[in-house]
Image (cartoon, rainbow, N blue to C red; front, top):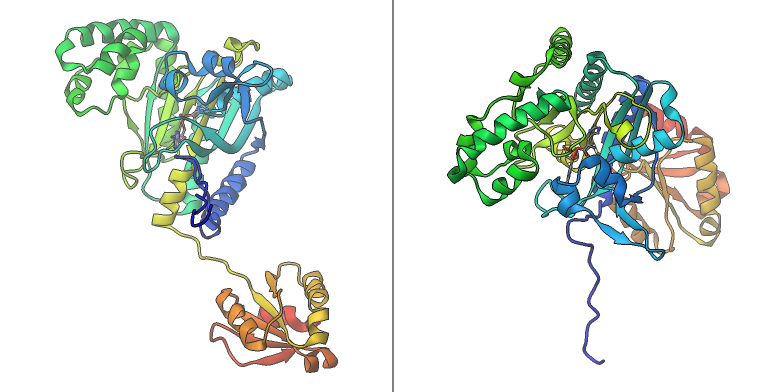
Length: 424
Ligand code: HAM
């Protein structure tokens, strides 16, 4: 149709492209995280993005926000009920059981996209990314301490200073049941102070009421009984030893008795790293112990602990607090004249062979010296490398600094390495 324009298709709401300028931040974060994880002996595991829906129902819990209203679930062409993974723990447990990894302790980590149909806002997306850790087969508070120390080391390596740690213990299921009864009777004593969502939660998942951000509820939440007063002897000892371990390692923390987490599988230790610099979505890393999940999913009883960090939130923090320098290309190679243009890609290959770390753009598309040089300048490269008829005949390359670093010169290709090194 004349005059009509074709409407461009856009990305799905809450799912974002990461453009090259920002990828540098992601790579910095991912590289540092991997280095820290490897230095503690954690090994990477990769699992599918799609799992049977039941896996998440049976692990995260039927009456959690994630399972009730946030999963991307669908029937595939065979009629199987599948979901895009909303988190990584369930898949990791499934894989560990399926491949018989649980006969010895395992320290695993993973990274990748997760999907939750939440209301998008700053720091909360429908496709977001996590790096997570799951440890299987270790029951003591020492491993809880280790995963916290590992995260502290990562914040240090990223130059992040604004994160604070909150911890709590959710005890064991009988202790939680006793606490739940007390909490319900306390909340039922204040019905007029509850909103509709909390009244519903009171019947389905009362601990989640404590997590409500509703301003009218804050007073009633502040007066609620503390779960830490309902811990049995062993849970209390575990928590005390965890805290003593953090003290010994000089990790500052606050006990937050209202920290309950939004997934049902936790017991005993839970923790969150929080920043006040990102607005409402300030939790950048969260996790805890989940000693009953492996058995619940059909494996032999195996204690477990883990956490996951939200990379979008961490990237925003790194950007605000300690952005890495943009590492542009080193050189942009241009060729003027028919002979050099016919040879330039071969010359570029030779340069890459002799200088393996070199970041080199080879101009493509021809054009005058002036137009090529302009592109070299715009590329952000430190040097323009010029191959003309004369240079080609003499076996040299013209080197012209683009960022005001010294004079133009001529260098033999095999001396370029030394040339760059002496000017680094
Ligand atoms: P989670 O608290 O649901 O725990 O998520 C962990 C982190 O992922 C959050 O603290 C946040 O940084 C990030 N995150 C969660 N949802 C979003 C979202 N919609 N947009 C952006 N970032 C988000 C878990 O996922 C557990 N699997 C953690 C764990 C591992 N526990 C034991 N092992």
